[in-house]
Length: 241
Image 1 (cartoon, one colour):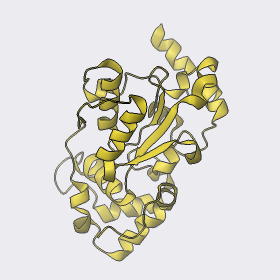
Image 2 (image 1 turned 90 degrees about the vertical axis):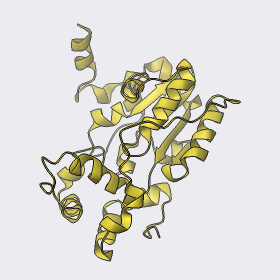
Image 3 (image 1 turned 180 degrees about the vertical axis):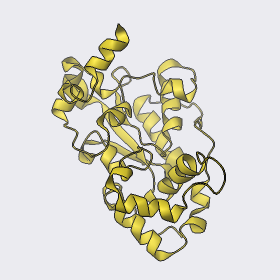
Image 4 (image 1 turned 135 degrees about the vertical axis):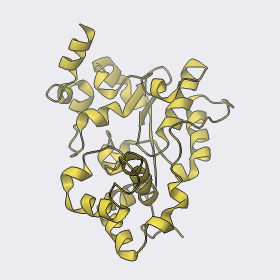
């Protein structure tokens, strides 16, 4: 019965009618249900976190769960430990402006390569059977439906559930230790717990950029596809040296 009620309340037709989305209409071409699942809220700790795939979100939720429960949970369980925005009621939304609202993002060049290595290369039937990185980028550039088919390569700016201007803090994978320390300080002043890394095996994308971004045309193509991410989150469009 609970599962049936859940489907009725949070399907494509009814999710936009929930109090959160009446205040913050979702206009992105990304899946609203998928985006909603990547927003987590805790009224007791006082935060709203907009998770970004391929931007340390497993590490983030693991550390947030530890703040809440005092112990670790495996990443899949940790991601289910908090309610999503679509579940907030009217009284929650009345208190929402007082929450600490944040996200953590990643340089679009390394995030896209990580998504390719994790979700395309790892899931090929056998080595050499998948598409090359150049072919992958070309498909993203020419097929809008494909670009929005998987949250791991949807532009991060299109997964924001709030206007960027309403976020109190934007952390970055490139400075994660410092930024996560600041987030924890904002939520629990005086907390000195060690930061826990979590998630699937790292793809090492940041150390493979030169190997896969083999020419300037490819770099420019990715810069065009993810232009909004570079601008919204203050990343330099120049390729990392």
